[in-house]
Length: 149
Image (cartoon, rainbow, N blue to C red; front, side, top):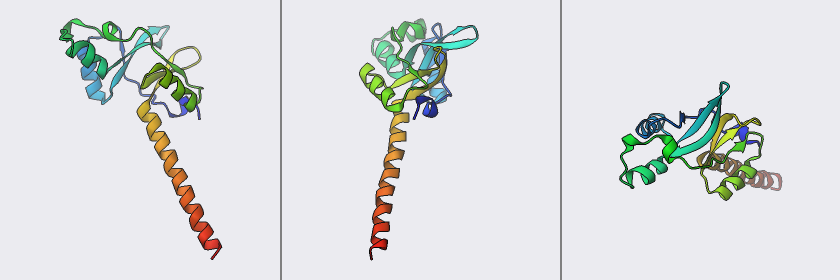
């Protein structure tokens, strides 16, 4: 299954100059733990960073920095790991593990933002698949018991 089939296409975004306080409020409003920082070029949005609720806690609150003085571009990581929408899920999962990230913007072949893939999305999908496998095993046992009685 390709990442583009399961990624969340409703991405909450901000530009580098967006105030950190507003970013926290936007995350709260949309019940998300991150904002994808984008740059607009020729009418398309390209991910240039990601800011998480943890970034705000560690880089701003715990450090005692005045949040009013910061923009998301000040606290986002220097590099953003992205995944192509055509990549397979397990390939994306390995990439996420290798990069040590829980969230990755999903991009098209030109690098334009199309969605976001989160560890939560993957866990939900894998849990559903495991449930279906368990049902299959149970059904097979029941069928065998009925057929061989």
